[in-house]
Amino acid sequence: FSPTPLDADLRNVAQSALAVSNFELVSVPVPQKEKGLEIGGLGEVAYTYLGDDAYWQHQLRVLAAYALYSGVGLKTTAGMGQCRWRR
Image (cartoon, rainbow, N blue to C red; front, side, top):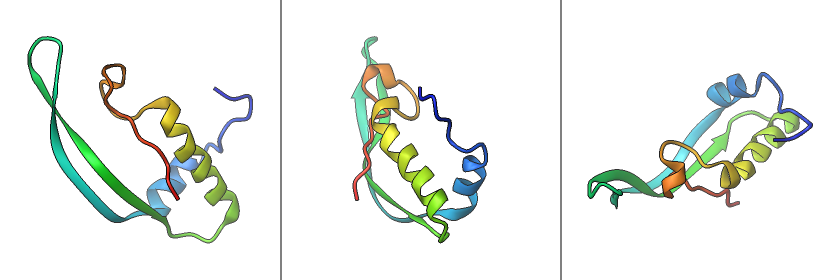
């Protein structure tokens, strides 16, 4: 969605240099159209970048900010998969 692509190695950097530093999550049932329930998660997760490279830190921040617009996970069109980046 941008004329400037993210670095092709960003996935590898994220897998090797990001860590969950704190989380507070609960399971929440979400009603579906067919009267069923889908279990979702609600809460906050804090990630820490373990590296010290400003280039990769910037790339990760761009990706985190984009998550608000892209949605993550499953059933994003049904309102699930919403997230936002907070400092």
